[in-house]
Length: 166
Image (tube, rainbow, N blue to C red; front, side, top):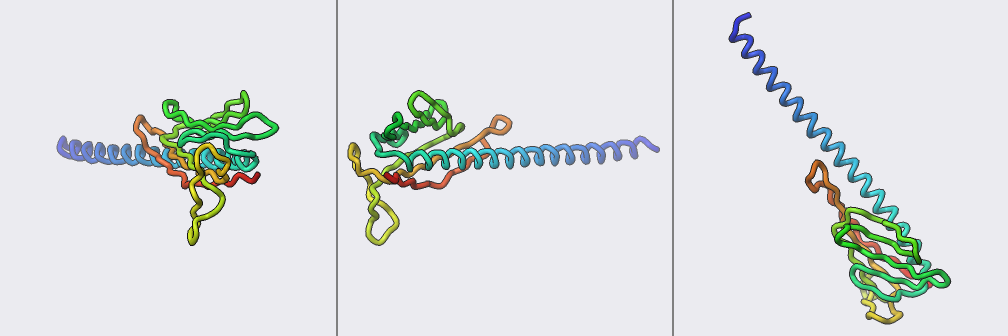
């Protein structure tokens, strides 16, 4: 075996190992991304199911803003949902019990509407602040996670409209 044959074989081997290494890196990154998508989807579904169950049982909406909702849930203590932008968390507060529903939230938005619909559409009339007209709550959020130090998986949860039953 000559020196030239050895150099050619070494070059081919280095190129093959480099290709295999980069393929392994991208495959591992793809699996981690899929895992992130699955976790975020499950957390979003659990949070939305929990919010839906609690809001439907509330009596009235006391106060609201685009990042905060407070319900009167007689005979229990008030029910509150807060979006804390600095912590990137959506929290549920029932009396003295604080639960974190979602983490990694880049944005949460609450809107409230009356129960009656606009003629010829599926949209509801906006509720006026400080009244008991609010019977529908629209919730939407965006969550993300980082992968190897860079923000990767972004999930936009479609808006859900929840009707206060009482």
